Length: 232
Image 1 (cartoon, helix red, strand yellow):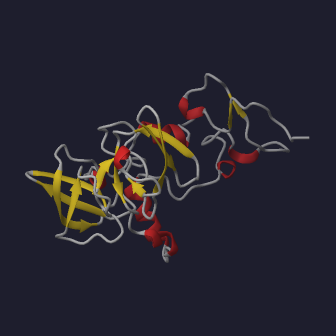
Image 2 (cartoon, helix red, strand yellow; image 1 turned 90 degrees about the horizontal axis):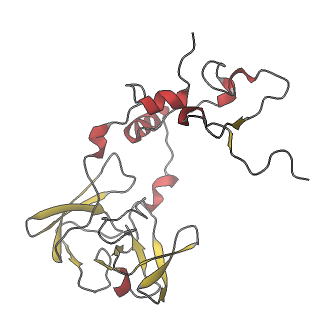
Image 3 (cartoon, helix red, strand yellow; image 1 turned 180 degrees about the vertical axis):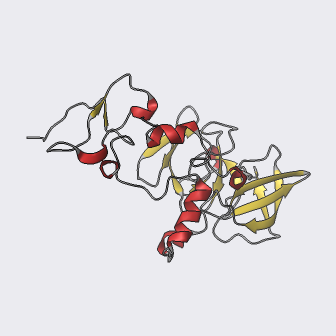
């Protein structure tokens, strides 16, 4: 009797493959109001690689990624146009060469890009029609609407990857909080019933080409490749 392969079991969302929802209780976003916001608390969130800031402006409380140099009970400015670490402002008001993070992809979406610990982007160039060019961490440029909001500075926790995981249990709990499959097993090392590549039967076991109309759980290996075989 067959059973679901790993991809299908994860997609179904059983207890074995289910993200820990209580880790994702804090949503990073930007407030509606403008003015001075107080940093009430800097804390750890299991769902984020960087620390988070709990900020309050008026009666509104919101959460943002912590910037390098953040201090509790200090204030940041929202929409003032003053370029200082932690301040939130529109892209069109940020000078060229400034480091930024938590960038909105569309005006008002609350920030979608550059939110990992230690990461930042840079304002590269300003174009016509209210477009701003940004250099991403991979050194590629993207152009966004000038009304998109960003945070000034570099995200804290830059040395996170330099500290090793001394115990396998630490890595296990990290992956559990993120809803990741861990430990990962090579597809060819599992049984044939568990994966299309399983058991390594045949003289040359290698990834196969998935059918164009294959269901999501069976789309493994080469999916609609332009070419196959060794390049001559």
